[in-house]
Image (tube, rainbow over all chains, first blue to last red; front, side, top):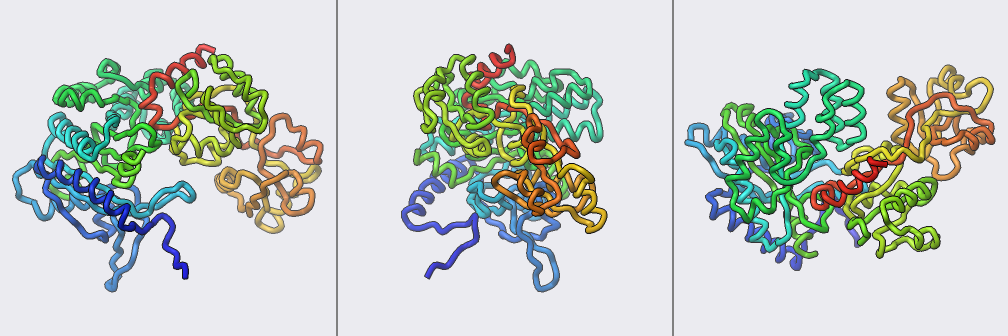
Length: 307
Length: 210
């Protein structure tokens, strides 16, 4: 008999599980040595709690026997923000947590995306830029190295670059949303068109296309460039060599505020993982603290190691 | 790997000649591609040829670093994780709403039946356009010649791409509304855009310079 499972889910059988466990254990070893304590939280949370994260809406909701709306978590950052605000309400920061856990998201059909996927990551709460940013970049690089990945690179940018350019130009409301939409959907033809239509500084269309070394930070307005430069200068040379600055980097989650980054391996068309600063998320749970973290997709890392 | 250091997804069909001309200008030898109609993969020059609507699929997955495809394909597949880098200017055409000549049967259907039936190869573009313009429509997805659908009474109107309007005219159809214009675009895989930044920027620079 063939009994199906939902699309976007899968069984892991012993041969693969042995390899996945080895990857996880290498990552855990680095997280643990850096002082990050592992936590587990329920896969189901109150939808109202997840909604504080301003991230994508949960794909799977259920009603419990009291009529509460529960949802499967879409990442671990929001549940850990809840833990930090609730269970560590008076603890002296910084707080360091790590996890290896499943998260759940809606998939677009026929793209080979997973509804349930395994993430390994850290959250560093109460450590501001640039020190906190440099610390998690360093942990991410050492974790990938420990897992056996050699040729990876780190794309580093900031969620505040284009918004601050738009602030300077005084672009607000619908026009601002349209410009940011082109950026998030990575339509640089559309971005160019909107910038021309609004008669804006051509730098707004040009700067997001810049990738390279620290020299491109001179182009960044405001203090975002200075903070990125400071974070890079704190990095170990071996990690710094892996950094590709990308002034157009945009991540899909709504809670990022400052530096953001993605992890790339040659031959894999999608990032292996990523993260960034979310300095306002903890405040939404009543404990305003700057924070930064990242998640690595264990399955994608496994795939990159197999290449 | 090509002389550009990139794997390039090239669409077969209407955009192919323009794309190959462009690659010639970039110094990629396309003579083997032009001479060989059945071969799909040309490893020595880094060219992969495919159906136009497959270009975003290969580029999104990283199976090709960059690709050329029409804006119509990108609009229909909105949400693909690819960078749209440049409007290449060639392959100009228009997405239109068309119906049989004479009194518009689609308007008549809307008035009398409250809903119009529309055949298309672009169900997402058609559904979104009709929704945005406040009309209820039943979208019928067809794979082959869309012009046939209103002639046989399957639907009252079609949403399709036209360059010159000749095929529409020959089948007794007239353009009622222009939905969007489309030209060829250069797209890139997000990871290649970082890891092969120098190669991709070199291509962009030469294409911008004309």
